[in-house]
Picture (cartoon, rainbow, N blue to C red):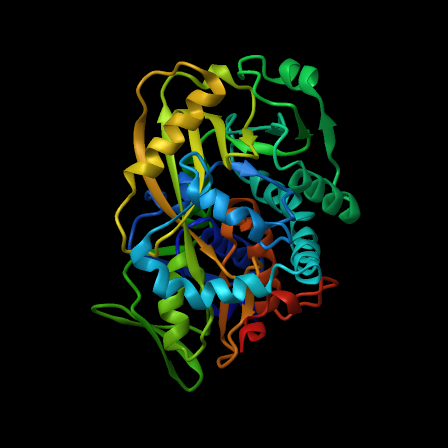
Length: 413
């Protein structure tokens, strides 16, 4: 029966392609649409490359509101706002503040933990079908901090303990043994030995895309402007053509909101703008990704060199790249590693974020043949395959022992 069903997906990033691969495993015919080629410089290309199964605690936490003013005032801090965007962000911020109570924080953490626990096995299912060629390294991920904001570090450790996340608290000597090239500004940290990192996220994405094509998938480079319906069947409308499907998946990250608005669903999706720069030929300086908790940035050793990522900037999809945020990353990298050559590749991407920091995964409120898979904030890369697996199971009407209600878009209505 599945054989005949044809599924259309909007978005050729990690979410869209993983949805497609798991739908193919269930015998569906799949076509992916994107206005750009897969691997274009969007979020799935420019992310930190972390596979972070431990990252269940998100930004909606009880200590965040006391920290925000200091973060905004600090030039080395992790947070910035484009002032022209503040009026647009106010409704989002109000919803965000309402999600920073202890109960809401734990609700998010538990429901992120549920899917993060399954994230690496879901990746391995896809990795089994491609030649990885050293593109993933199993060396863990290291977080380090100084002796400021220790209450926040304690909160993170306690919440993860409560959820049963495996973590290894490390002291100065252990950090130095793991990463001898870091300047000794740190006092302690935590190491997640089972976490992994990508040597080149774009290459992994393209290998998944090639697998999708090899299995008979189709890709159309078209900008889908709207979704229409005829006898309950969803129709993608591009500038030039209409495409009819049995069921469709909206998986275009921060750009999903235009479509969900048109479908009559007011989902408060916005974007955290993230940046990266590369320091070429410096990847030998680190063995694994290292994140500075105080400054909210990380450095990952990749094929392109050291990729320095981080900062959260609220400014929507249209504002230009901020040179001050690039400078922030360069200064932070030198703070961690001392002298570095000139940087290359200034990049800005959009993390799709909801005020409760849970993704939207599941059917549309108004249309049973439209499914959503977006809003994974900092964890889109980690959660691609498990999200695809969950959505493919929903479309195939399979039973699951997961509680999927917390990810439903109905929570915003």
